[in-house]
Image 1 (cartoon, rainbow, N blue to C red):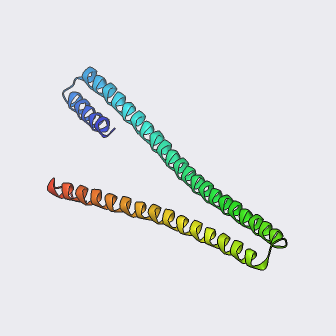
Image 2 (tube, one colour; image 1 turned 180 degrees about the vertical axis):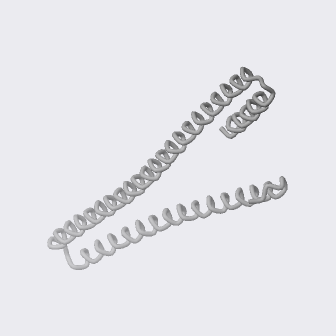
Image 3 (cartoon, rainbow, N blue to C red; image 1 turned 120 degrees about the horizontal axis):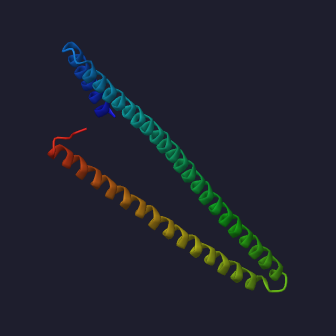
Length: 161
């Protein structure tokens, strides 16, 4: 677009030179070219603005989509937690009901077994969450490495930001 504005200026200058030389037809032709160049420059400018607006809309849509994804994941995690709580309550009620029919020692053994199971599940969940956290830190380190490589390349090429 800048190219066409510069071209319009050039044709304006040519028209002025032609008119000074007494060549009015040549000046008209130069002015016609100037108008064409200005028209093209304006069209490109409009296209640029339209594309910039489209990019803004796409970026906004992407941000909204990322927000919805995060909300969906949070809701999913909440539903899973509710399901686990319900399962625990059902298990507890089953245990309480079954305790009425067996001896006190048997009840204690069953209760201890259930607690041990719960502890094992909690330990497994902790290990799973830890591995996910470790993976996130590995990704962060990789991104930092790429960023430092990019900065080094920019410095090498004399393109420091």
